[in-house]
Amino acid sequence: MPGPALSPRLLPWLTLVAGLALAVWFLFAPARPQGLRVPDMDEKPAAVASAGVDLHGTFTAGPGRAAAADGEDWPAFRGPEGDNVSRSGVRLDIGWGAEGPRKRWSQHCGFGYAAPAVADGRVFLTDYDVARKQDALRCLSLTDGAEIWHRAYPVIAKFNHGMSRTVPAVAAGTVVSLGPRCHVLACDAASGDFRWGIDLVRDHGAKEPPWYAGQCPLIDRGRVILAPAGPEVLLMAVDLASGVPVWTVPNPRKLAMSHASVLCATIDGQRQYIYAGMTGITAVAAEDGRLLWEFNGWKVTIAWVPTPVQAGPHEILCAGGYNAGAAMLRVVRDGETWKASLAWTLPARDFGSDQQTPILYHGSIFGVVPDGQMVCLALDGTRRWASGRADRFGLGPYAIADGRLFILNDTGMLTVAEASDSAWRRLAQAQVLTGHDSWGPIAVAGRALLVRDLDTLTCLELGKP
Image 1: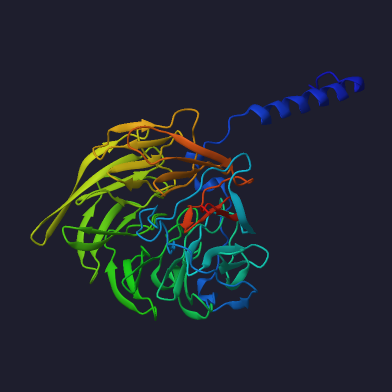
Image 2: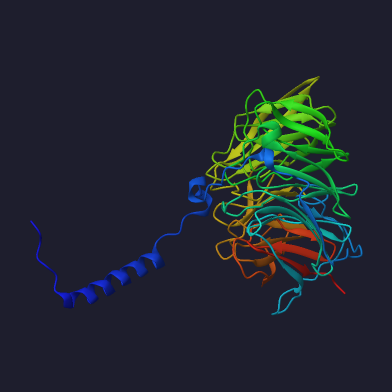
């Protein structure tokens, strides 16, 4: 039976009340926790026939010119030594005053967290052009950000909590990028000429991670080290000049591709490549790819993003989000037999990382933990200090240069602190970006500090006169 009819005079008042209630809900409803994102929260990438992707793509020359060298390059993910530490010796000025550090230039980017590599006065960036539906490898001038060249190839991708999120690698005049849908492109670093390309999905059965590829290519001794993590090939080395495979490593345990990158480490005199796939860690000999050791006694669920860190002559530090916490592995050799075991673990409340890779510096471990604080650990896992409630950084990146920690928070606030094992000491602070999701790794090249948010790359000048 129908209920009583509403008086027409009440309808405007009911509409107003409903609107106010909805506004209050939007203002005060709890935000979705960043560390607990799952793939279904974002758009699904459109299906694409990888066989149709022409990695030669199209080339465009720009007016930019390479800068004169003014210090150490930052030629790959986590810098020249792969440890996120600049050792150029350049003294960096942090006496900014109210205006903050001087901005050299800014460049608009496609949505994402891809960070730059810097070599020979050029800035290299993996990007995505939404309008043209293309991956792009861009080369910019370190002087003023003007584009020197870019090479793009067609790839259909939808917003999936950003698109591009990897750092190119540069060596011996060649730049190598890995796009969001697992396309590897190698070009002449100066001219942009096409060298070679590999589609890891088409050629090796790789499966894209939940939020597109986060793996940064590793160049080591004239070879590019990649982790397709396909049904047959877990790891591979290809010749830098030609792209021809040198060796491949089988994948009998069917490890899936994570967002982590391959670590190059030396343990007991053996140079080795260590990769954290989604369900385990594998290490192979650098010279020929033979299996050295495996470990599956600790893992990260949903998305393994931080790269393992060599934290001692026999120690490998692993950290992750989604309540994984951290683990220190101890790797030992007995003749030709290698074994990895757990030295210690920490729960997420004590140490862990959703996105950024921790830093080992002067015998201490530095990292931003899930509650947003920067903390310092001893090598036995003991916490030495934390930055406190007043200094939290969300999912932002950090690097060490001139003996100091440079840390971005989510909204682009740059904080400088002593890279000390004794206490947290903030030295300077300035808002250097005006967007959000300032998560791309920091690059340091001489007097330049390169930072980005979701859609803007900015070069800051930090050199002393």
